[in-house]
Image (cartoon, rainbow, N blue to C red; front, side, top):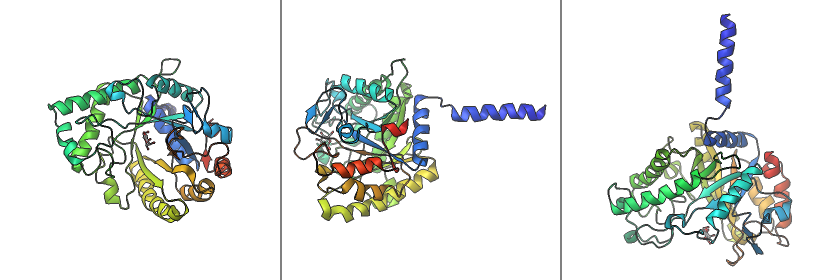
Length: 358
Ligand code: BMA
């Protein structure tokens, strides 16, 4: 009898360990499995709303035109939601984002969300970054006007993310990656405008708003830009209790000449993210990457693929294929010289696109 009861109890414990309690738990489990699968999920920003030669069509995607498959991951940006604009900073209507999140979720894909908010002090854009124009200290001090403004802005992102639902009315889990590339100095929340404590406070106030509202569909990603030491990686880390994904944003620059530099950063920063993720029970990902214009025709299969497949990452995301910004695309479109290289990357058993998630 005792054995029987033990069996029941341990079976119940095993069940509760595998059944996810919240949408966020389900996505964390999924990303964790991805990371251990030997395949890296591929994602692109704004992949299904515009591409190199088109914009706003339905069911179109440059990745699909070249590979026959959707990316596993679609990223969306909430910049300008905070100022009540109906479209984001790249003209994507928020209602379209809501629809695309639902479509991609229904296809079995994963959605991630980034945020390029305006500067709450100047109301300039995310790149309005001069230290005298970015009083982060005041933004994170409760009771100040700027703190109220920023809190309201965060509330808007929380409400939007909490309102992402599938056809059955269930919240759709997303990865949210605010305050990204903070080790750089190009955004107003960059390391030149705050102390490490103040930056961590930005994260804390963000999490507090989401938690207060009971938003349970967010997996949280931390994504420094290129850093070369563990100290630099963690200098502004808000804490294991606030973060699920140890990310890194590592772009390639300068065509063929820049390849060695790119690989140097990959092989310095990814081992830190991967090792620490394992140690802390977190997920590692290359949260942003790419070579603008893909000016090296063999980049995807001969540079990126061998570089990243050494590491157990859950996913990699590349940036957008802009129809208007000159030379600003990160996935080859039909007719681009890197098309074949991207198809090889797609076919590799080290990468996962939408069909592989099924
Ligand atoms: C940058 C560029 C910009 C864009 C911004 C937010 O890297 O793509 O054109 O506005 O990201 O998506």
